[in-house]
Image: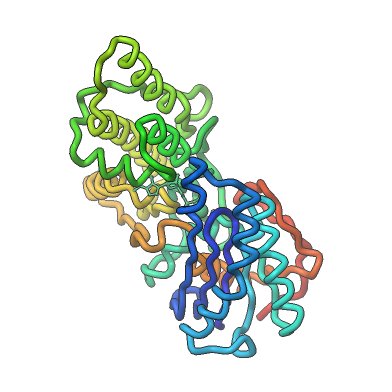
Length: 345
Ligand code: KG4
Ligand code: ZN
């Protein structure tokens, strides 16, 4: 089954073709980052307008690269939630048009489910159940992935997502948007023990996170140094921040792995590109005899191959939407918000 995937939830217009959820036939991404950089973050209206301009051209490229015509596609999968509403609407409406005209099943895909599915593209043996750390610009969840379409959230952030904390701390240190990758690079030349940043405990659930204190601690550190006329060592701050993030994530994840008797841990989302988190999780999983799965860097960030992959598994589980499908700005990974039409396969 060849699925055309469409992703437009934030600042990447992406279209891909994936066969049977695992084999990437094409994967095209047009990033708007350079434009949003000028404003220090994503400007929603600009994002929607750029998606509108790019989506037809990116789809043409993805089909050409796959050597297929639209008639040879078996289903159209699209990110319908969560994300910037205006941005999502462009992809959803475009997908509906394609599905309607070409009489193809329309498969709605949850963006975070897609991030998890990025792993199916490169690890053919990976099958649920497994424990997953989802870490992106908008989400930080520990998820028990029960099946390809069933999830249980066992930990979540109470405030900022880890990617958001990275980007805000990076901004305070003078890095351009999105700052996560710059912080990561700077951290590699820094002393992680130079600054001691807070590792907040969250009452109630041992698997919940709080990242906003960490971000504020970096902002305060810079502010206090300025007041005293002292220089902050950017690479040391970045390294201390990265060490704290690694401690917070690996501590909770390994504890959850023990409780859930997980033999597989999967990383997903933009921050799974982080070199510190990857190395730390490799070490921890090796110690505990747990198999670790990570997406390659090219599939960590937003892309449409992951949407086409998840679209296949949603289709297999008969999750086909009708033409009333709408975009939804926020939706838990456990939920679905569309009218299910008849089985696809
Ligand atoms: O998953 P993603 O591409 O988009 C969302 O769905 O949010 O994640 C983007 C986030 C941004 O906050 C970005 O700074 C962060 O992932 N990120 C990183 C790294 N690469 C991307 N954070 C830390 N280290 C990295 N190497
Ligand atoms: Zn994403």
